[in-house]
Image (tube, rainbow, N blue to C red):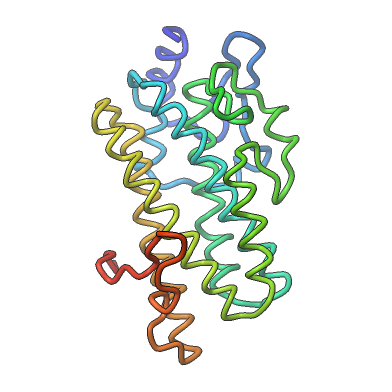
Length: 242
């Protein structure tokens, strides 16, 4: 880890998508995603990935691994439902934002050499070959797989359902990130905190995009029309809108 820490300090300005080098135990971290070089992450996210490594608890390691699958779900679920229901919000959010969210968490896991394909076992190494085994709609985290399967079946049924799926996914992301941000703050992991807060801000915007889509269909209450399901409230007028 000491070698990797020095490596990160010395490569400021290099494309983050190409910066990650092999690290012990046969890790393959040269490029976590073959398309990474075409994904431009925001400056604050690139800076966080290049920042010195924080001391992470096992709980926070697990949260990074879990969040990778959760962001991957958002991207793939929206695109796969879009093939059946041409709801423009799904396509725009997936292609403009979720690809970046997934890649940012992917590179964060690579930075800390976390195994994100054998959850909850996050012990090194990070292996690109293992990640590539998981195609669209397939996840190493059982709760995420169940969520995908259930929401895909719901979303392909109608445009209204597709928009409701978007509301549900974004609230799920925000609820999880609320907890993970507390973990990052407790660990003084400023790099992880920066990325998690960026993800949450994106989810706020996406929630309101899906809410507007429902209202445009004369669903007056938007996402709030979903109400509460299995103890989770999907009505959140308090979310920031900007």
